[in-house]
Every structure is written in C-alpha cells, then in structure tokens.
Image (cartoon, rainbow, N blue to C red):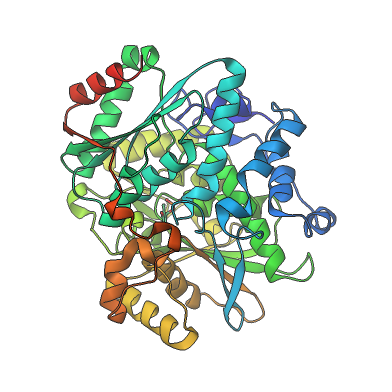
Length: 471
Ligand SMILES: *Cc1c(COP(=O)(O)O)cnc(C)c1O
C-alpha cells in the first residue's frame, strides 16, 4: 500500500514513512491510494476474531512495511484487557430497542483517543528502535489529547513528550491525570496563557526548521494516518457485536470535532462494511453540521468558537475534513487544493452548495448530521440516568441526541461513547445533583505529587526548555 497527498504531491510514501510525519510536503493529508475491499466472506472470517486479531487483519491491509509477526505482536501488546478494562476492548451495550452504546473510553485516560494513541505509542517505539532514532513530541492540549499522548508514550524508548497546556485552565481531574505522571520522558509545560497561545507556540517552534531538525521535533495530532486507521477497527468490532450476519446494515453516530473519529467510519464504509448512515454529532460549534446541512464549510474565528460543556468538540475548523472532501470530489487533488488552499485560504469558507457533488455527501457517502446545545446535553444525561440507570458523559450525550434524530426502522444505531462522565463531573452534577462514581484507580489522584513546570507563553521559553532536556 502506498499513500498519496490530498493536494496532489507526486511522491507516494509507505506507512512507516508517514507514521512519524504530520502533513504531506504540499500541506495536504495522507490517504491510501485505494481502500482495500472487504466482502461478506471476509467479514464472516473476521467475525469471531478477538479485538487484537481483528486489528492485525485490518491493519495488515494498510501496513506492508512491518513484518506480519511484528505487527501481530504490536496489536497483541496494545489491546489487552489489562489496559482497556475488558477482553472485548470495546463492549457494546443495548440502551433501548435498536440503539447501542459502543464503549471506547475504558483505556488509561478514559476517552476514546486511547484507542489509537496506545497503538501509536507502540508503533513509534518499534519504528524508532528499528531506525536507531529518537523523537521529541511537542504538543498543545486543553485536555484529552495531551493525556492520551502522555499515557501512550510514558516509558517508551526513544520518545520524549513535551506537552504544553494553559496554566490552571484544565479541569482538576485532567490536570491531576497528566501532572501526576512521574516518567522521566514526560514533560508537562504549563504556559501562562490560553490554549490558543499554546497552539501558536507549538506551530512557531515547528516552523523553525533548524530547531525542528536539530531536536527531532514531531507531533501526534489528529491528522496522523496511523491514528485514523487504528480507529477503523472499532467500527468493525461494533458491527460484529450488533449483527448476527454479514449483510445486515447498521448506522453509527459519532460525537465529532476534528472529524478524525467519523473519518475512520467513512474509511470503514468505503472498505465495504455495511454502514447505512454516519451521523456527525456536533455541539454549539457546528462547523460540520452546517456543512452537511448546507454545503458550506465555514471556519470560525476564535471569538466565534464557544466554550461548551462538551469541550473536546470545541473546534473552529475540522482538521481531518479535507480527507473526506477529497473523496467527495472524486479524489480530484487539484480540485481539493483549489478548495482548501485557494477558497478556504482567501474567503475562510468552502462553498459546495451549488456543486452537484454535494448531494453525494448524504447520498453515496451516507452522511447525516445534528447539533446539540448545553440544555440538550443536560436533558439527555438526565433522561438516560432515569430511564436506563446509565451515566453518560457530555460528548456521548451529544451523540445520543443526534442518533435519535436519524433512526431508521430495522437498522441498529450504534452511538460511539467517547469519554467517561468522571472527566466532566461538573456538568454531571449540574444535570443530576450528584457527581459520577470514580474508577478505583483514579481515587485520590489530585493529592499525588506533581511533575509540571510553569513557563512564560513564548516560543523562546519552550525552545530553551526542550534544548535543556534533550541532552
Ligand atoms: C477528541 C474527542 C472528540 C472529537 O473527536 P474527533 O476525532 O476530533 O472528531 C469527541 N469526544 C471526545 C471525548 C474527545 O476526546
């Protein structure tokens, strides 16, 4: 399998080459040259596999530069009951007739990002070891991504993590999760600024090509193809749990921000998994809902990006969206480049409302969307608690509300549960009058010793810190 850029760069790369990279050289995103097809006969042979076996079969279709035995061992080491809580890894629960919740958030940091990041940590260690290289991961986080990256990379040989976050602005639980890590290869940098400052500083440091090369700076952001392909696996695992035979259709609803999770669903559907509808659920930050309703993709300004009670979906633009648009316009790279470089660069928006391809988004590609508000989240959390004695988090609540707006008779609807309620306890208290139970392993983490340094919000301060700790 070779990988191409959505903007038409002529070079074709292999999996391990793009593993450690971010964007393609022309600013595009990497995608496989084609989607391997999985028919009903293959599905039947995959149905009874364990999660790590299924991951191996699926990843093998996309990775041909890691020997099979090694890839198998990496999958077996990543997806264990010890790390993800159950042997199923992503157990499915029926909530009401035909509506299911697929649990993706029982990994180390209690959000679905662990599903991909844990694999990435093992792939990085493997590939860096093979090359005899080191990598310093620099990132910015307001919560879930940073902790998932740190728990995936802790103790990994050849990898250091420098994670910036806005000082004092993450929830107490999120701060405790990250700052209590004592591994010497994990560095928490609390910057005296807001999240946007952190992001700007990471960009500034990465744009200093001399510094970047000298200190081997890399990222683990959501456009990484390895993260995306790891997420395709749980669409198959969810399908097998919700169906008894391999021709039946199901639908998925996906709480969405950067379009990474639902893009993995799109890939699963393109491979032939019988998915009828992919419902994109957004909160008040409805860039994506607006596109699927109107054909206009309008990036928001910082001032126009709301702070909501499902904060991991508070985005102003959806960084993986270009991958879907590339497929939507018939894999036409020059058209994709004109849209994302030209139109989006100039006008801050892409308008496909008058383009005949827009109808294909709902048609051939099966997308639908819905948006929710804070009041919707409270109502859904309350209702789910009352009728099913089940506690769901705010992002999953956005999903469940959207799912109910797109049910079709006889088609199971699988809602992806993207975090556990303990991460967003404040809103649970607001909805129910009491907080969620805390998993035993997180009891008292706020009192643990902390490993974090406070720095001014400048690129110079961050560079100096990295230089000092890379010797
Ligand atoms: C990251 C995240 C999302 C959004 O996922 P995308 O892949 O960015 O669309 C939704 N819910 C939770 C809890 C998250 O951490």
